[in-house]
Amino acid sequence: MQKLFFTLLPIAFFFLACNKINNNTTVAPDVASGYTVINNGNAAVSKIDTTDKIALSIDQAIPAVSNQSYYSNTPIIFFLNDKILLSSIYDNIVVMQDQVKVKGTIYVNESYNGNAIITFTPTDAFATGSTISIVLKKDIQGQSGNKLLGDYVISYKTLAPSLTSFDDNKDFERATPTSITGVAFSGDGGLISGKFGSEKPFQKSRYVAISTGSAIVSANTAIGNISSMMYLGPINSDISSFSFEYDFISCEFNEYVGKRTDDAAIVTIYGPKGSYTELVTSVNQVGVAGNTADSIPKLPDGGDNYVGHTGWLRKSISFKNVGTPAFIIFTVTNVADKQLTSILAIDSLAY
Image (tube, rainbow, N blue to C red):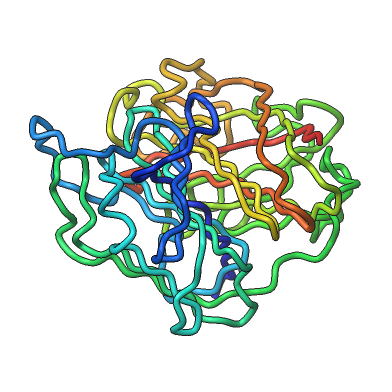
């Protein structure tokens, strides 16, 4: 059985008596539920819009496969097909460790099409070897007021995270044929040396990549043929920002731009003092991308006839210090389908 990794991410919502942090972030106070809700953007709403007739559903869940083993710091993410009603959150999300309810932070991030991306992070890190269960109850409501058709339940076992420091390998050059210092993968992920088809490292000779496909960048398959994750850490220095180069490559360019099947890349920073998650990019956010015309090995797939990519772009992330040791987790996922592979390549990380 392939090992999988999981760190719960924050799920964001704001409620009554919210306090503004900046123009795009609102924090709700911790309540009796034990959850603090943080809303990044406009995907969490305070009232029902009767003109919105969308039936609420979960387009994608991470982890995508229940009853598996994941790293204890693996992100838990839910992509919804609508915005979310804030007041429906507290009573309808339950996270338990070994059958005991845990406290944590819920983040709501906004996808490019405005829908909610929900993540959860526990206040205290999950223990290795424990059983985690998450229930999104059917009474959670979308902006339309519509509810899920039934409870959504995930359960998994936790594994110990990597203990090899990442601090001296931010260019991904320290590696052997079987391991990369401070880097671990779940699903289809690995180190790429030299050229990968037409793709070259941003600098030096190596970079890392994860895909939503089967044995595209490694010998493994994405979890549920949907999602893969890359874990960087532990990071043993206090950080409140980092930056990196990325190239987002997808067979969904360009005919699926503007569609619900919006493959996406997400990054999470996680530590003993909290966590932060942010959308890196998605097919819809990029829009029309360049054509690499069969120049990526094993791609295009699924009957597509070309691959699009952004080229190397610099991305900077800022957040409140999460303490040490910290981990950076990248996730790439199909949304609303299992077809057409996307790849997230990362190089030249700095903090």
